[in-house]
Amino acid sequence: MQNVQGASFAGPELRRQRIAWYTYGWASHAFETTVVAVFLSQYLPAVAEKAVGKNGRLHVLGIPIAPDSLFTYTASFCAFVLIVLMPIAGAVADRFGRRKEMLLTFGFLGAASCAELWFITGSNWGLGVGLTVAAYLTYTCGKVIYNSMLPDRAAADERDRVSSVGWAAGYIGGGLLLALNFVLSFFISDLAELARISLGLAGLWWAAFALVPLRMLRNAPHDVAKNGQRSRGAVFTAGFRQLGDTFRHMRGYPMTLLFLLAYLIYYDGINTVTTL
Image (cartoon, rainbow, N blue to C red; front, side, top):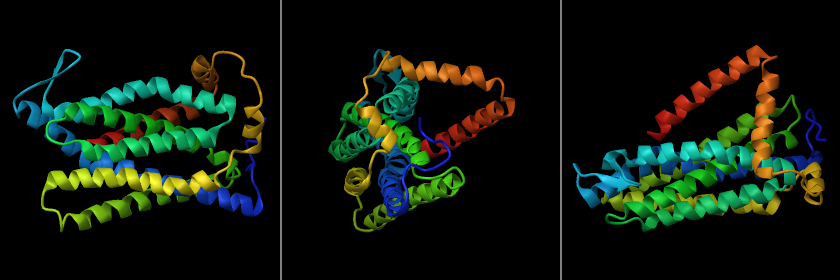
């Protein structure tokens, strides 16, 4: 069983693993800043408006949607799908221990989806929705795995500091790319072209810097041991069973439950603001 107090690495290797972990945050946060917070929430509705007009309606699975609401509906759809996907992703990582492989698979798939947003032109809103869903789901599932790797790279008394550095690296990386996009705006007068280039660059940035953890990141020893073990039970329901067990035991810790509820409201509030 994993030691929940101490890190799984030590010495120079621990420093190396932290750098690799920080770098993935630096790489992937381009999705939150450039793609979600700035460009896609404006560009995707503009593409949809070209298809049906400002007062027209898109028809998705028989549901009429106003063009300027397309991104909101797409993000909401992703949120509901992630309720199912995130526990499964966490359970698979816990069961098989292949956190590095899962993180980078989600990462490179998300980066490819972002890069392909460059191909959204004219009124091709359907391609935009498909790529947005792919990028959103892979980014968020990757984030679940990324967060789960922290205890192996920081002892209990260091996790706050190491986590803070990881968050800072993510925002600095995403902010630098956004600054580059701002500089590009002085040279590209066509806003649609600027959006396409910026969205594509986000995918390239994500993939390029993800090469660092691809080379440096390692699975923790306890995760490596799980690779050779046969799994028992249905992994696709294990995450929900674990979640149920957690909530049943949580009733004995009312302050912790209150904290989690408050954090959920706080974090979802921030996500709503940055997304919309």
